[in-house]
Image 1: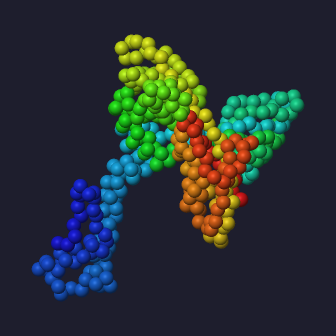
Image 2: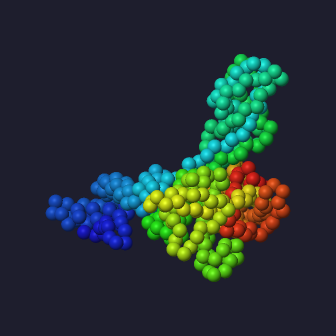
Image 3: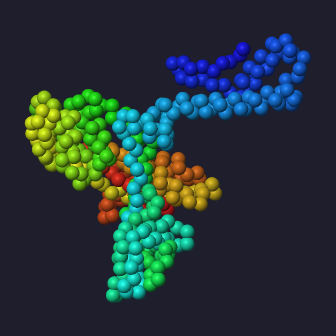
Length: 392
Protein backbone atom coordinates (compact mmCIF):
# COMPACT_ATOMS: atom_id res chain seq x y z
CA UNK A 1 0.00 0.00 0.00
CA UNK A 2 1.04 3.62 -0.50
CA UNK A 3 1.89 6.13 2.18
CA UNK A 4 1.53 5.02 5.82
CA UNK A 5 1.34 6.98 9.06
CA UNK A 6 4.38 6.65 11.29
CA UNK A 7 5.78 7.50 14.70
CA UNK A 8 9.57 7.87 14.64
CA UNK A 9 12.28 9.84 16.41
CA UNK A 10 11.34 12.70 14.09
CA UNK A 11 7.80 12.76 15.43
CA UNK A 12 4.31 11.66 14.38
CA UNK A 13 3.42 11.69 10.69
CA UNK A 14 -0.25 11.36 9.74
CA UNK A 15 -1.96 11.15 6.37
CA UNK A 16 -3.81 13.82 4.45
CA UNK A 17 -7.27 13.18 3.02
CA UNK A 18 -5.85 12.75 -0.50
CA UNK A 19 -3.30 10.20 0.72
CA UNK A 20 -6.03 8.22 2.48
CA UNK A 21 -8.14 8.22 -0.69
CA UNK A 22 -5.17 7.00 -2.75
CA UNK A 23 -4.54 4.16 -0.26
CA UNK A 24 -8.17 3.04 -0.29
CA UNK A 25 -8.38 3.14 -4.10
CA UNK A 26 -5.14 1.17 -4.38
CA UNK A 27 -6.45 -1.45 -1.95
CA UNK A 28 -9.77 -1.82 -3.81
CA UNK A 29 -8.09 -2.06 -7.19
CA UNK A 30 -5.95 -4.87 -5.87
CA UNK A 31 -8.92 -6.82 -4.55
CA UNK A 32 -10.42 -9.59 -6.72
CA UNK A 33 -14.01 -8.58 -5.90
CA UNK A 34 -13.53 -4.93 -7.03
CA UNK A 35 -10.59 -4.82 -9.42
CA UNK A 36 -10.06 -2.03 -11.92
CA UNK A 37 -13.48 -2.18 -13.57
CA UNK A 38 -15.19 0.26 -11.22
CA UNK A 39 -14.89 4.02 -11.54
CA UNK A 40 -13.14 5.56 -8.54
CA UNK A 41 -13.31 9.16 -9.71
CA UNK A 42 -14.40 11.86 -7.28
CA UNK A 43 -17.74 12.26 -9.08
CA UNK A 44 -18.58 8.54 -9.07
CA UNK A 45 -20.68 6.89 -6.32
CA UNK A 46 -17.77 4.75 -5.14
CA UNK A 47 -15.39 7.73 -5.24
CA UNK A 48 -17.74 9.85 -3.14
CA UNK A 49 -18.15 7.01 -0.64
CA UNK A 50 -14.37 6.68 -0.36
CA UNK A 51 -14.01 10.44 0.13
CA UNK A 52 -16.60 10.35 2.93
CA UNK A 53 -14.72 7.59 4.77
CA UNK A 54 -11.43 9.41 4.23
CA UNK A 55 -12.85 12.59 5.76
CA UNK A 56 -13.76 10.72 8.94
CA UNK A 57 -10.28 9.19 9.14
CA UNK A 58 -8.72 12.64 8.77
CA UNK A 59 -10.59 13.78 11.88
CA UNK A 60 -9.19 10.79 13.79
CA UNK A 61 -5.67 11.61 12.59
CA UNK A 62 -6.09 15.26 13.54
CA UNK A 63 -7.14 14.24 17.03
CA UNK A 64 -4.20 11.86 17.27
CA UNK A 65 -1.83 14.64 16.13
CA UNK A 66 -3.27 17.06 18.69
CA UNK A 67 -2.90 14.47 21.45
CA UNK A 68 0.70 13.83 20.45
CA UNK A 69 1.49 17.53 20.38
CA UNK A 70 -0.16 18.00 23.77
CA UNK A 71 2.71 16.12 25.39
CA UNK A 72 5.23 18.56 23.96
CA UNK A 73 5.49 21.38 26.53
CA UNK A 74 6.71 23.79 23.85
CA UNK A 75 3.52 23.46 21.83
CA UNK A 76 0.96 22.62 24.53
CA UNK A 77 -1.55 25.27 25.51
CA UNK A 78 -4.38 25.83 27.95
CA UNK A 79 -5.29 23.06 30.39
CA UNK A 80 -2.88 20.61 28.73
CA UNK A 81 0.05 22.96 29.33
CA UNK A 82 -1.13 23.56 32.90
CA UNK A 83 -1.15 19.80 33.53
CA UNK A 84 2.37 19.36 32.13
CA UNK A 85 3.67 22.19 34.29
CA UNK A 86 1.99 20.74 37.39
CA UNK A 87 4.20 17.67 36.99
CA UNK A 88 7.25 19.78 37.87
CA UNK A 89 5.47 21.97 40.41
CA UNK A 90 5.02 25.06 38.21
CA UNK A 91 1.63 26.75 38.12
CA UNK A 92 0.34 29.35 35.72
CA UNK A 93 -0.01 32.78 37.32
CA UNK A 94 -3.70 33.58 37.32
CA UNK A 95 -5.14 36.85 36.10
CA UNK A 96 -5.80 39.45 38.80
CA UNK A 97 -8.69 41.87 39.14
CA UNK A 98 -8.88 45.62 38.66
CA UNK A 99 -9.48 47.42 41.96
CA UNK A 100 -10.47 50.90 43.05
CA UNK A 101 -12.96 53.03 44.97
CA UNK A 102 -16.54 53.87 44.07
CA UNK A 103 -18.70 56.62 45.54
CA UNK A 104 -22.31 55.71 46.30
CA UNK A 105 -24.92 58.45 46.79
CA UNK A 106 -28.37 58.10 48.25
CA UNK A 107 -30.46 58.20 51.40
CA UNK A 108 -28.48 58.39 54.66
CA UNK A 109 -28.52 55.08 56.53
CA UNK A 110 -28.97 52.94 53.42
CA UNK A 111 -26.91 49.74 53.74
CA UNK A 112 -25.24 48.36 50.62
CA UNK A 113 -24.20 44.75 51.14
CA UNK A 114 -20.88 43.36 49.99
CA UNK A 115 -21.10 42.19 46.41
CA UNK A 116 -23.53 44.87 45.22
CA UNK A 117 -22.59 45.69 41.64
CA UNK A 118 -22.26 48.74 39.43
CA UNK A 119 -21.04 49.08 35.86
CA UNK A 120 -20.01 51.32 33.00
CA UNK A 121 -23.08 52.25 30.97
CA UNK A 122 -25.76 49.73 30.10
CA UNK A 123 -23.52 46.85 29.08
CA UNK A 124 -20.00 47.70 30.19
CA UNK A 125 -17.73 45.88 32.65
CA UNK A 126 -18.92 45.57 36.26
CA UNK A 127 -17.42 46.04 39.72
CA UNK A 128 -18.65 44.74 43.06
CA UNK A 129 -18.29 46.19 46.55
CA UNK A 130 -15.67 44.39 48.62
CA UNK A 131 -17.43 45.04 51.94
CA UNK A 132 -20.79 46.32 53.13
CA UNK A 133 -21.05 50.10 53.41
CA UNK A 134 -23.65 52.46 54.88
CA UNK A 135 -24.46 55.75 53.18
CA UNK A 136 -23.51 58.51 55.62
CA UNK A 137 -25.34 61.55 56.88
CA UNK A 138 -24.10 63.61 53.96
CA UNK A 139 -25.79 61.23 51.54
CA UNK A 140 -22.62 59.63 50.25
CA UNK A 141 -20.12 56.89 51.06
CA UNK A 142 -16.92 55.56 49.48
CA UNK A 143 -16.24 51.85 49.26
CA UNK A 144 -13.53 49.70 47.73
CA UNK A 145 -14.62 47.60 44.79
CA UNK A 146 -13.19 44.88 42.57
CA UNK A 147 -13.91 44.11 38.94
CA UNK A 148 -16.20 41.14 38.34
CA UNK A 149 -14.06 39.90 35.46
CA UNK A 150 -10.34 39.18 35.83
CA UNK A 151 -7.65 40.80 33.74
CA UNK A 152 -6.65 44.33 32.75
CA UNK A 153 -10.21 45.69 32.66
CA UNK A 154 -10.18 49.48 32.44
CA UNK A 155 -12.35 51.75 34.60
CA UNK A 156 -11.39 55.34 33.89
CA UNK A 157 -12.31 58.16 36.28
CA UNK A 158 -16.11 58.77 36.42
CA UNK A 159 -16.73 55.89 33.99
CA UNK A 160 -18.78 53.82 36.47
CA UNK A 161 -22.26 55.34 36.34
CA UNK A 162 -24.88 52.59 36.43
CA UNK A 163 -26.27 50.63 39.39
CA UNK A 164 -26.73 46.95 38.59
CA UNK A 165 -28.16 45.62 41.88
CA UNK A 166 -30.84 48.11 42.84
CA UNK A 167 -31.24 48.92 46.54
CA UNK A 168 -33.94 51.22 47.90
CA UNK A 169 -32.17 54.44 48.88
CA UNK A 170 -29.18 53.94 46.56
CA UNK A 171 -29.53 56.65 43.94
CA UNK A 172 -26.27 56.93 41.98
CA UNK A 173 -22.69 55.70 41.71
CA UNK A 174 -19.40 56.95 40.28
CA UNK A 175 -15.64 56.61 40.67
CA UNK A 176 -13.54 59.70 41.19
CA UNK A 177 -10.27 58.10 40.11
CA UNK A 178 -9.05 55.45 37.68
CA UNK A 179 -9.08 51.88 38.92
CA UNK A 180 -5.78 50.02 39.15
CA UNK A 181 -6.03 47.52 36.27
CA UNK A 182 -5.59 43.81 36.94
CA UNK A 183 -2.95 41.68 35.29
CA UNK A 184 -3.70 39.23 32.46
CA UNK A 185 -3.28 35.50 32.92
CA UNK A 186 0.28 34.35 32.37
CA UNK A 187 0.81 33.61 28.69
CA UNK A 188 1.78 30.19 27.38
CA UNK A 189 5.21 31.46 26.30
CA UNK A 190 6.07 32.93 29.70
CA UNK A 191 4.79 29.85 31.53
CA UNK A 192 6.90 27.58 29.33
CA UNK A 193 9.99 29.70 30.02
CA UNK A 194 9.41 29.34 33.78
CA UNK A 195 8.84 25.60 33.42
CA UNK A 196 12.14 25.22 31.56
CA UNK A 197 14.03 27.22 34.17
CA UNK A 198 12.50 25.17 36.98
CA UNK A 199 14.66 22.17 36.04
CA UNK A 200 17.68 24.12 37.26
CA UNK A 201 16.41 23.65 40.82
CA UNK A 202 18.00 20.20 40.86
CA UNK A 203 21.40 21.88 40.48
CA UNK A 204 21.48 22.88 44.15
CA UNK A 205 23.76 25.79 44.90
CA UNK A 206 24.12 26.95 41.29
CA UNK A 207 22.92 30.41 40.41
CA UNK A 208 20.45 29.01 37.87
CA UNK A 209 19.04 26.81 40.63
CA UNK A 210 18.72 29.76 43.01
CA UNK A 211 16.72 31.73 40.45
CA UNK A 212 14.55 28.75 39.62
CA UNK A 213 13.79 28.07 43.28
CA UNK A 214 12.78 31.68 43.87
CA UNK A 215 10.53 31.71 40.80
CA UNK A 216 8.88 28.52 42.04
CA UNK A 217 7.48 30.47 45.00
CA UNK A 218 3.84 31.45 44.47
CA UNK A 219 4.60 34.93 45.80
CA UNK A 220 7.44 35.61 43.36
CA UNK A 221 6.65 36.80 39.84
CA UNK A 222 10.24 37.39 38.69
CA UNK A 223 13.73 36.72 40.01
CA UNK A 224 17.32 37.24 38.96
CA UNK A 225 20.72 36.42 40.43
CA UNK A 226 23.70 38.75 39.95
CA UNK A 227 27.14 37.25 40.59
CA UNK A 228 30.58 38.76 41.25
CA UNK A 229 33.29 36.12 41.24
CA UNK A 230 36.13 38.63 40.96
CA UNK A 231 38.45 40.00 43.65
CA UNK A 232 37.09 43.55 43.34
CA UNK A 233 33.81 45.42 43.61
CA UNK A 234 32.05 45.03 40.26
CA UNK A 235 30.11 47.47 38.10
CA UNK A 236 26.90 46.66 39.98
CA UNK A 237 28.43 47.51 43.35
CA UNK A 238 28.64 43.90 44.53
CA UNK A 239 31.59 43.17 46.84
CA UNK A 240 34.12 40.55 45.74
CA UNK A 241 32.92 36.92 45.74
CA UNK A 242 29.23 37.61 46.36
CA UNK A 243 25.92 36.91 44.67
CA UNK A 244 22.76 38.99 44.94
CA UNK A 245 19.31 37.46 44.44
CA UNK A 246 16.73 40.00 43.23
CA UNK A 247 13.00 39.34 43.50
CA UNK A 248 9.77 41.05 42.47
CA UNK A 249 7.19 42.07 43.59
CA UNK A 250 8.16 43.89 46.75
CA UNK A 251 6.66 43.16 50.13
CA UNK A 252 7.09 39.37 50.16
CA UNK A 253 7.65 38.06 53.69
CA UNK A 254 11.36 37.94 54.53
CA UNK A 255 10.99 34.46 56.02
CA UNK A 256 9.56 33.13 52.74
CA UNK A 257 12.46 34.37 50.62
CA UNK A 258 15.08 33.39 53.19
CA UNK A 259 13.73 29.84 53.55
CA UNK A 260 13.91 29.31 49.79
CA UNK A 261 17.44 30.68 49.58
CA UNK A 262 18.85 28.67 52.45
CA UNK A 263 17.13 25.53 51.14
CA UNK A 264 18.57 25.70 47.64
CA UNK A 265 21.70 27.75 48.14
CA UNK A 266 22.86 28.07 51.69
CA UNK A 267 26.07 29.88 50.91
CA UNK A 268 28.00 28.39 47.97
CA UNK A 269 31.59 27.69 48.93
CA UNK A 270 33.51 30.95 49.20
CA UNK A 271 30.56 33.03 48.01
CA UNK A 272 28.36 35.16 50.28
CA UNK A 273 24.89 36.48 49.56
CA UNK A 274 24.48 40.23 49.27
CA UNK A 275 21.57 42.65 49.14
CA UNK A 276 19.57 45.33 50.89
CA UNK A 277 17.42 42.85 52.86
CA UNK A 278 18.54 40.07 55.19
CA UNK A 279 17.07 37.37 57.41
CA UNK A 280 18.39 34.58 59.66
CA UNK A 281 17.13 31.26 58.36
CA UNK A 282 17.69 27.74 59.69
CA UNK A 283 19.24 25.29 57.22
CA UNK A 284 18.61 21.54 56.94
CA UNK A 285 21.31 20.85 59.54
CA UNK A 286 19.72 23.12 62.09
CA UNK A 287 22.26 25.92 61.75
CA UNK A 288 21.25 29.52 61.41
CA UNK A 289 22.53 31.31 58.34
CA UNK A 290 22.15 34.93 57.35
CA UNK A 291 20.89 35.29 53.81
CA UNK A 292 20.64 38.53 51.88
CA UNK A 293 18.76 39.63 48.79
CA UNK A 294 17.26 42.72 47.16
CA UNK A 295 13.87 43.68 45.76
CA UNK A 296 13.55 44.93 42.20
CA UNK A 297 12.35 48.46 41.62
CA UNK A 298 9.21 48.59 39.50
CA UNK A 299 9.24 50.95 36.52
CA UNK A 300 5.72 52.04 35.53
CA UNK A 301 5.91 52.23 31.75
CA UNK A 302 3.73 54.58 29.74
CA UNK A 303 3.38 53.82 26.03
CA UNK A 304 1.99 56.05 23.29
CA UNK A 305 1.37 54.60 19.81
CA UNK A 306 0.47 56.97 16.98
CA UNK A 307 -1.02 54.87 14.18
CA UNK A 308 -1.70 55.38 10.50
CA UNK A 309 -4.50 52.97 9.67
CA UNK A 310 -6.36 51.65 6.64
CA UNK A 311 -9.95 50.54 6.19
CA UNK A 312 -8.91 47.10 7.47
CA UNK A 313 -8.37 48.49 10.97
CA UNK A 314 -11.24 46.97 12.99
CA UNK A 315 -13.64 48.42 15.51
CA UNK A 316 -12.00 47.69 18.83
CA UNK A 317 -8.55 47.78 17.25
CA UNK A 318 -7.22 50.11 19.94
CA UNK A 319 -8.10 47.54 22.61
CA UNK A 320 -6.30 44.80 20.66
CA UNK A 321 -3.18 46.95 20.41
CA UNK A 322 -3.25 47.76 24.11
CA UNK A 323 -3.70 44.11 25.09
CA UNK A 324 -0.79 43.01 22.88
CA UNK A 325 1.53 45.67 24.27
CA UNK A 326 0.65 44.80 27.87
CA UNK A 327 1.13 41.07 27.24
CA UNK A 328 4.53 41.65 25.68
CA UNK A 329 5.64 44.15 28.31
CA UNK A 330 4.61 42.06 31.29
CA UNK A 331 6.47 39.07 29.89
CA UNK A 332 9.69 41.00 30.51
CA UNK A 333 11.58 40.00 33.62
CA UNK A 334 14.10 41.73 35.87
CA UNK A 335 16.77 43.55 33.88
CA UNK A 336 15.07 43.14 30.49
CA UNK A 337 15.24 46.25 28.32
CA UNK A 338 12.11 47.76 26.75
CA UNK A 339 12.58 47.73 22.99
CA UNK A 340 10.58 50.12 20.82
CA UNK A 341 10.75 47.72 17.87
CA UNK A 342 9.27 44.91 19.98
CA UNK A 343 6.38 47.09 21.16
CA UNK A 344 5.62 48.15 17.60
CA UNK A 345 5.86 44.57 16.37
CA UNK A 346 3.37 43.44 19.01
CA UNK A 347 0.92 46.17 18.01
CA UNK A 348 1.15 45.45 14.28
CA UNK A 349 0.93 41.70 14.82
CA UNK A 350 -2.18 42.00 16.98
CA UNK A 351 -4.28 44.10 14.67
CA UNK A 352 -4.71 44.36 10.89
CA UNK A 353 -4.88 47.67 9.09
CA UNK A 354 -1.84 49.41 10.62
CA UNK A 355 0.23 50.91 7.79
CA UNK A 356 2.60 52.98 9.95
CA UNK A 357 3.35 53.39 13.64
CA UNK A 358 5.36 55.78 15.80
CA UNK A 359 6.01 55.03 19.46
CA UNK A 360 7.04 56.95 22.55
CA UNK A 361 7.60 55.61 26.06
CA UNK A 362 8.29 57.11 29.47
CA UNK A 363 8.78 55.93 33.04
CA UNK A 364 6.22 57.27 35.51
CA UNK A 365 3.53 59.87 34.95
CA UNK A 366 6.04 62.70 35.30
CA UNK A 367 8.77 61.14 33.19
CA UNK A 368 10.09 62.49 29.92
CA UNK A 369 8.85 60.91 26.69
CA UNK A 370 11.44 59.16 24.55
CA UNK A 371 11.27 57.46 21.17
CA UNK A 372 14.27 55.20 21.83
CA UNK A 373 14.43 51.91 23.68
CA UNK A 374 14.76 51.95 27.47
CA UNK A 375 17.72 50.39 29.27
CA UNK A 376 16.58 48.62 32.43
CA UNK A 377 19.05 48.06 35.27
CA UNK A 378 19.83 44.66 36.78
CA UNK A 379 17.59 45.43 39.80
CA UNK A 380 14.66 46.97 37.92
CA UNK A 381 11.63 45.54 36.16
CA UNK A 382 9.37 47.27 33.66
CA UNK A 383 5.64 46.81 34.17
CA UNK A 384 2.83 47.72 31.82
CA UNK A 385 -0.88 48.41 32.19
CA UNK A 386 -3.60 48.99 29.61
CA UNK A 387 -4.48 52.18 31.48
CA UNK A 388 -1.01 53.51 30.65
CA UNK A 389 -1.11 52.65 26.94
CA UNK A 390 -2.45 55.35 24.64
CA UNK A 391 -3.39 54.70 21.00
CA UNK A 392 -3.73 57.78 18.80
